[in-house]
Amino acid sequence: MTLNLSVDEVLTTTRSVRKRLDLEKSVPREVLLECLELAIQAPTGSNAQGWQWMFVEDPDKKTALADIYRHNATPYLDAPKPTYGDARDQQRPRVTESAKYLNDHLHEVPVMLIPCLEGSPEVATAGSAGFWGSLLPAVWSFMLALRSRGLGSAWTTLHLVGKGEKLAADVLGIPFDQYRQGGLFPIAYTKGTDFRPAKRLPVEQIVHFDSW
Image (tube, rainbow, N blue to C red; front, side, top):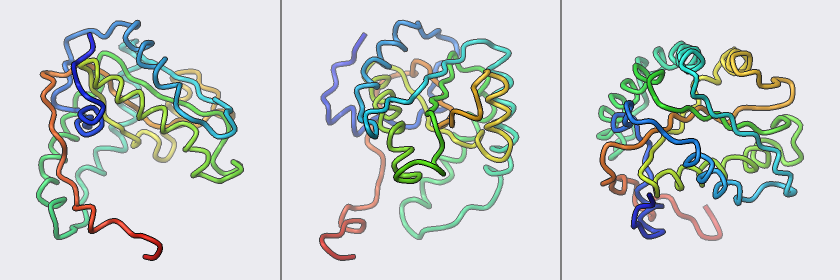
């Protein structure tokens, strides 16, 4: 089922969903593939389309990936964070609580996604910007497609820290010498669909024209 949302509503209400992921409701494969069909319309450098999409449903593999993630996420989430002196500081306790909830329950999500891209940022023609620019737009399109169908996700990257990416590759059989992982995304239907735009800095504080 597709929600009756405008393009602007989808763009402004696609949130990182953690505590409102429905851990009990299964996600049909046909919905995942439908969202992916939309996502792979995103642009890629040189039209290479060097992506591969790893969906994980197996409980043991989800647990193994959650353990890798948790090894890196727990100390990070417990560490002091910088202050900004604006609305971001006010939101931090809620965001941290939400992130800790996901850290504790990651293994329970119906599906995980690890998007992969062939090659490496170190040898890409345009460096890391060009490399990741050939994957991340499609991932964001996938998240928008999820939102429009009543599902949610959260962009996480902490499993990649240290030896984590290699460990995850071993769990899933990803050729580590050929592909880099772009994150780990929990996928589930959301508890309710009434998401709102997030608080952001005024554009006047972050925009420049012609000169800094």
